[in-house]
Length: 85
Image 1 (cartoon, rainbow, N blue to C red):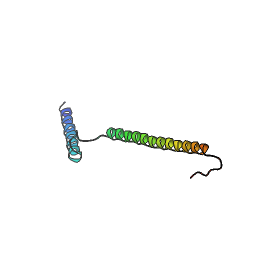
Image 2: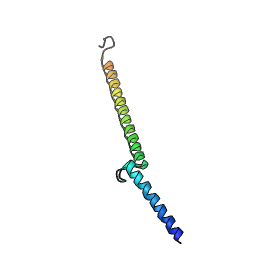
Image 3: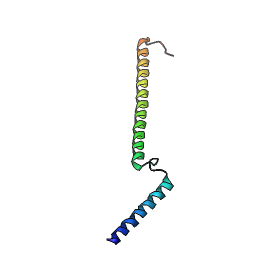
Image 4: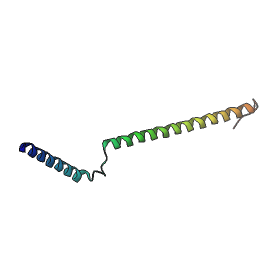
């Protein structure tokens, strides 16, 4: 029985030393970021970037489509012998 208490005490001291070392290197536990937090930020950033890219492509497509329609409508309205600027 005394051996078991000693082993528990040694294990607790080892864990405490590891926690103190981690706190010294990485700061207070509330200030640390876990891998899970970083992955959430990465995935969120990827989603926002994809939405921004899709919006840019959509705006470009619509503006090009409207420009082409405007050009075709003006070419239809001009007489066949007239030169358009």
